[in-house]
Image 1 (cartoon, rainbow over the protein chains, first blue to last red):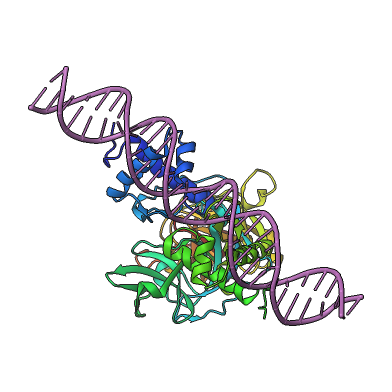
Image 2 (cartoon, rainbow over the protein chains, first blue to last red):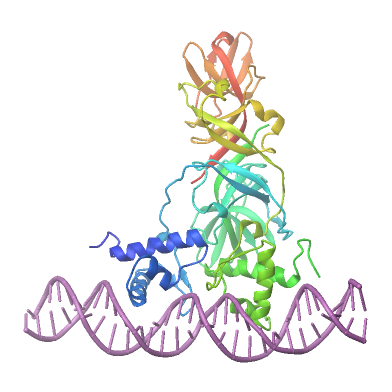
Length: 219
Length: 219
DNA sequence: ATAGCAACCAAACACTTGTGCTGTCAAGAG
DNA sequence: CTCTTGACAGCACAAGTGTTTGGTTGCTAT
C-alpha cells in the first residue's frame, strides 16, 4: 500500500511522527523515540525507512549526530485549528521600515500577555507564539501599518514569500519583511511599492519567527 | 562582569550560541558542541552554566536526553515592552446585509472572549467594547479585510468620518462603513475605491458602535 | 522451484553525549 | 588567617543513540 507520494504507510507515519515530536518538544526525535512510540520492532527498521525518506527528499539528516533529523518545509503538514483561546507574550518592538539597532536586551521579567482566540492564530506550539509591536510603514500593502501588533510563531526557516521577523547579524538589527531565497542571496522585500528590498547573504539572516496574525488599534 | 539580566558574559554567549545553532541546524546543540565552538575547557563548565541558565528561566532542558535544550520565546532577542490585557466578547459576524447581535446582551450568552492588550484599547474604555468578525472586502483601503476581527466601542452617535457599525432600519441590515453627515442625509462610505457609498436618512441609521481596533489571522 | 528484492527483524557494536566526581583558584566574609 | 562560595578544569563513566551485520518473510518474475 502506497500513497500518492510514493511513501509507504509506515514512512508516512514516521514523517508525521517526526513533525509532531518536533512541535511538542522543540528538538528532533531519536531513532529509538520513533521505534518505541510507533511500536516498530527494531531500530534498524527505522533507520531503513529514514534512509528511504531521505532519498526521497522528505527529510534531511546530519550523519552520526544524535537527533540530527531536519524536516524540509515541504514535509510539514497543515495543522488543524484548536478550540480555546491562549495568551502570548508581547515581547517588544520591531521595525518594518529600515532596520534599527537591536539592543540585544532579552529582558528577564514578565511580559504583557496578549490573549488570542485560536481561530486567529494557529493552535500549534503555543509557547512558540509571541507578539511584537510594529514601527514603520513598510508593510502597508500587506495591511500592516505602524503601531500594529504582529503575532509571530517562532521558526528558524522560511519559505519563499513568507512574512518573517529577520535578524541581520552584521547590522545587528531586526526587521519585518517578506523573505525570498534567490540563489546565493536573500531578498528581504517590504510590502510597500515605494520601498526597495534589502539584499543580503543567508549567513547574515536569522529568521526569528513568521507572522501569523495582526492586531491594530484605531483609537 | 554581568549584564542587566544577571547573566554572566559566558552565559550570554552560550544563550546566543544555542539560538544561532538552532537557526543553523534545526536542532539544539550538544554540550560538546557548545564547549568546542565557544572554546570552553570542559563539558562540566557548560553543564554548570546551563544549569544556571535553566534556574534563571532562560532555557528549558529535557533531562538526560541528548540535545534536549529548548529556548522559551522570552530568550529570543528583541526589544522589550510591557503592560496588561483585557477581555472583550466576540459577539458575531458583520456582513453587508447580515443581522447584528445586540451588543447590549453581553452578559447573557457565552461568547468567545478576545483578550486585547490595553495599549491597543485603553482599559477604561473597554467596558463598552465588543468584537465582530468581518465578512467582505469593503474596508480594504482602511487595512481591514475579510475575516478580520474588528473591536467596536458601543456608541450611538458618530462624528464625521468615523468608522462605525450601523444598522439600516428599513433594510434591517448591518454594515461596516465610514459615516458622514451631509445636510439632510447620511453618507455611508466604504473604504474601497471600487465600491459606491450608500446614501440614506438619519432616521434610518442606528449607530451600533465605532471601530477602535482590528485583529487579523494570516494562517 | 528458485532467484531476486523490498521490507522487516534482532542483537551487537561503536560512537555521541549528559553527568558525576575530584580538584583548583580567586574573591569575600567572618 | 580560615572558611565559604562561585566559577572553572579535567577526567571517567554510564546512558543515549546511530550504525552494522546477519538473518527472515513474503512477493514476483523467470
